[in-house]
Length: 372
Image (cartoon, rainbow, N blue to C red; front, side, top):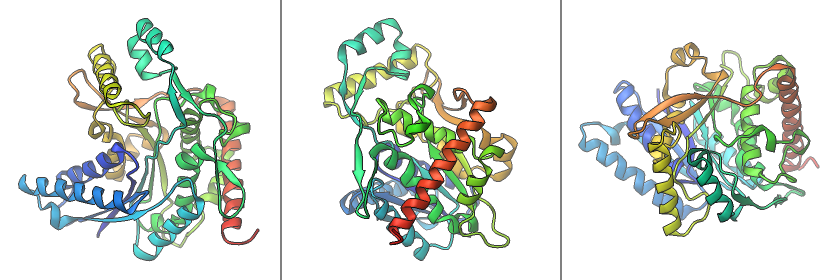
C-alpha cells in the first residue's frame, strides 16, 4: 500500500527531512512498498526548485543501487501558514487528491527576529560558550506582530505560522490520517521555555519571545493530549472524520537540536561565524549541536518511519525526542527534558491550552465557512 508523508519545506530543515525520508525509507522498508512525499512551499518557484533538488537526490540514491525513482514519488503545493484561508485550501487539496496520509510533519519555524544584541552575545559566550549557543538570550524579537485574515480579524503571526495553522490543518485532514498510520509529528525546539509562555496570551501577542512561546505551546499541546483533564477538547479535536474501524491519530513531538539555518537573517560572514561557534560548542561537549540539517532531521524522520511496535515500546507519545550528535557529528536520538512536565499545574495547563485551542479553531472554522 502506498505510504504518504506531508512535510513543510519552509527551511533547510524541511528539505533535509524530505531527503532523509527518502534515504531511510529505502533502507528500512520492503521493496514492495512505495512512498509519496507531499511537500509544501510558499511559492510555485520554490516548489519547482525543491522538486529539482529532491529528484537529484533520488538519482544519487539510484546510483547506490536503490530503486529510488521507482519507489518514491513527490507531490507539491503551496501554502501560507499565516493565512487560515490558505491552510483551508490546502486541506481541501489533500482531501480531494489523496486516499490517506500516514504522517504529517509540522516543522515551521518562523520567528519575529529583528537583530542580535552583540554585546550580550559576547558576554554570554565568555561566561559559558555551550549555554550561550544552546539557549541564547541575545536574539532581539519584535512584539505584537499579527497577521490579518481575509475573513475578518487577525491572529498572532508567529503563533499562526508555528502552531495554529498546523493545528487547524491536522483537524481538517483528520479523515486522511485516520485511514493511514495517523501520526502527527510536531517539530519543537530546545528553546521551548516555560518562563516565556503565558496561557492567558496563548497567541503570544504580548510575548517578548514569541518564537520560544510558540514552541512551548507545541510541547504542551502534544504532551498533555493524553491527560484526563484535557479529554473533552482533545476528543472534540480528533473526532473529525471518524468512521468505524478507523484508528485515532497519535501526536508526537521532537526537535532538530541546534542546526545552522537562516532563521535569523545574517550576513554570509556572520552565518559562517555562527556555524563555527556551533562546531566549537560540539567540540566542547554539547550533545545538541547537530549543525547539519540532515542530522537535525533524524528525530522527525524516525517518528515518521519507525514501526508502531517500536514507538509503543519506547513510549514515544509521552516523550520529546531530540536530534543530537556526538563530538564527531554522528547523529544520536535523545529524549529531552520538558520543563515543569508533571503535577497538577501541568494538567491544568494542558486543560486550559486545549480548551483555548479548540475554541479558536471552532471560531475560525465558522468564519472561514461563512458562518459569521
